[in-house]
Every structure is written in structure tokens, then in C-alpha cells.
Image (cartoon, rainbow, N blue to C red; front, side, top):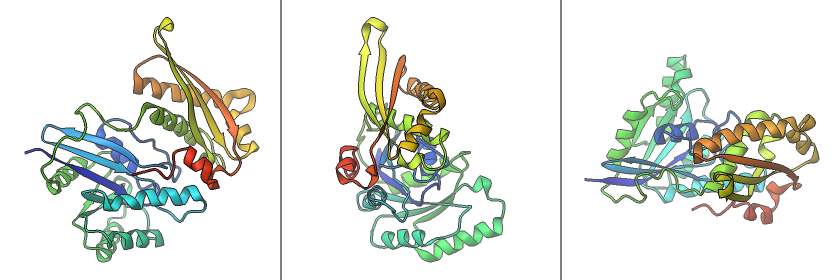
Length: 299
């Protein structure tokens, strides 16, 4: 019997949802960062075995939004609760229960889908009595179908957890070819890899104000199939543009060099990456730009 189904991963920012997805898929399909709100749109990762196919949906961290983009991100996550076969509610073993967690649980109570509580980052949790008390509090908030403690970073108990997920799924077809690990187009993945390097290499005001747009991708057969990519890094203020470019263009060059390495690993072809920086003031609060940049269209 072949099992299949859709599984959403919801939780606050920085609890390790994207790290978990990449661990399960065995390849990077979602960018990661120590900075909160790294994931902005729902990311699908496809887990394949001979007897099963699980389509995971990595969602933006649910938070109290401060701008229209933040609201769209939170809505995108919550909207998946009614469209899947299993819900993973992921929390951090290192953090206390907050008002946002209480809000998430309130939404969970409105769905009939099985919900699994996953306590991540147990590799870093040294105070075991405190961890046990945290889990006890969560179990008192909602009748979870199951409770699991894992480390997505180190891989602890992830394989066992996958078996429990598959046990909850019903017989079903392969929705995607066996060799497919995501349904997102190459342009999206490339733009995310570039944004990941911005998050990694810049500090303070820059990361959350950045959007990356792929302007053009063209393969040149005369140049041994060299793939030329022109991309624009959008920020909200002139000061952010200056930080991104850096003295003598050093920062934007470093971002491009590190992004090109990951894009090469993704596509397996030689890359020429040309990056430009553009200021669009307050784009995170402007509906026209948000729609043009692809937000608010998640299913």
C-alpha cells in the first residue's frame, strides 16, 4: 500500500521549521538563518520513499505583524491548517510559551486535522526538568495526537518521527515524480538563495527590508552553457542600499560570490550572477508591490 498526504509545519519564527524540512528532504529547499522571519512564503518540500510520498509545507513564522507583509506571512501559515492531512506544531525547547503560541493553539482548536506537537532543539536543552515542564504545559493547552522531541539540526529522532507521520496518512497516489523535491520554480529558489546570503552577511536594519527579484535568466550555448542571471536586490532606504553595496562594492560582491556557490550546487551549471540594488521605499506596506513580488497568493 502506498501512502501519501500533505503536512504543514507551523510555529513561531526561528523554531527550526526550515531546518527540519531540509533535514527530511535531504537537500536545501528552504533557506535558513538565525534571524527571525526568514521564511516569507509557503515552501513545499517533497519526501519520497517506495511506499510513501509526503508533501511538507514549511510556513512563515507566525508573529504579531508590524506591516502588511507580516500579516500576509502570518495569514499564509494559518491558511494551511484546513488544507492538509496532518499539522505539525513546532516549538523550541529553549523558549517559553508566549501569547503568540496561545493564539496558534486557538487556531488549532478550530480544525479537525490531527495535530502533532514537535519540540525542536533538544540538543541544546540542558535543563531537563524545565523541558519536561514546558511539554507538560503545552499538553495542557491542546489534546495533541502525539508529542515528539527532536533536533532538526542534529537529526535526533527525526527518522522515528517520520514513521509516525506516515502512520497517520491514508493510502494515496504519488502527487509528484519521485525525483522532484519541491514544486517551486528555479527562479524562486535562486532568489531565495541570494536573500539567504543577505541575511547571513548583513546586520541590523537590512535583512527584513530585502526582497530579491530575478530580472533575467539566459543560457549561452556559445559559452559552454553558461547561465547568466541578472537579479535586483530591493531595499526600503538609501542607507540600506549603501550597506548592501559596501565600501568599493565589497559587500555586494561577497553576497554574489556566496550565492553563486549555492546556485551552482542547485543547478549544476556554470553561473554568471549580476546583482544590482534598488530602493523602493516602504515596499512591505504597499499592496501593489506585495502583489507584484508574489505575496498573498499562497494556496
